[in-house]
Image (cartoon, rainbow, N blue to C red; front, top):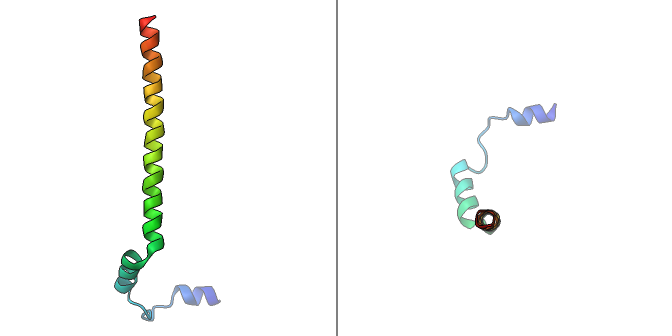
Amino acid sequence: NEEFSIAFDDRPHKMPYEDFYIDAYLNNEEIERAFDLIQLIWHKIFEVIRFYMNLGMDSFDAKVKS
């Protein structure tokens, strides 16, 4: 079974893990773009939450005043 032999292949890899992680995090623009995108989405989510909280407060104030 080929998959089994790959899963339990403990020969050293051609690329050490440390080098792989350094390459991935320092040189990979896609990862940076992905983080930027996540940050952007996060900010948008908070903007929406803040908007609806303000909306809720306004309607609450209106109910209290009436």
